[in-house]
Image (cartoon, rainbow, N blue to C red; front, top):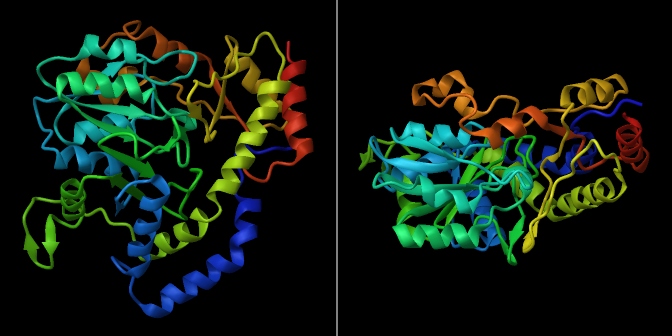
Length: 365
């Protein structure tokens, strides 16, 4: 049996006619930037997240960078980020000229450890980027308490957590602002690059919108040195269709994950831990194993697709060698990078495919 790491086939087949009809509709209008589809998607996604404002962006990285820029974060400033996350989190900070300061995660959940944050706060610290990694919300309550104590902004990196909840509230509405990616592989994915920032702060939303439109609040009037980062009409139209399916797709991911959690039984394999007060939407189902590479080869040889999130921690990447963080300085991030393995997780997996993955892992010695 061959099971890819991810497949969009079933998902896209179900909505194909609607997608093609919507493309035809947008195409015939001949309006492709900042039109009605973007406006409607922003309204619908803000409502979904339980916030007042949504600003479409060109991608998820910009959805994190632009609010940092709007808050005036700049060179000589510092922003707390998890040591274990995709590099886009740190890049968003770097694009402002500020320095990302890495804080170790809890190895059980992969998310930033609130107990370690305060140790890294200095007079230069201006914000905390709380990443909801793999689809599980970070522990927001203690993070927000620390932020209040030190007068810091908190921005959710919600790129992998569309629809996840913390204490009954959806991600996106848990802090000052949040950035979402709609990269095609996300739980809510466009058919190309796309992103959005959400917030309850009108002043921030207006500034981010202007910054993403060349710093312009209206045509040919530029109040900031801005960027070009706008959600286009075609992607917004596709996202509106997909948003209506998101809860169904997330429920199926949770169902698959529950089979993995209850039926994978191999002492060499460490399953993810779900924090209380959270609902996980399993953008990624990540396991850990001290013989990760051997397990990966075994699964690949049996036709099971895998991925590693992420095999080289950020502080050991060439992109951040300037920070001069030596190997061993962030041992938990390094341990996760060396042991984490992502197994198939997508809408459309059959019961036989799920069973095949489970049986293969259980039989590995």
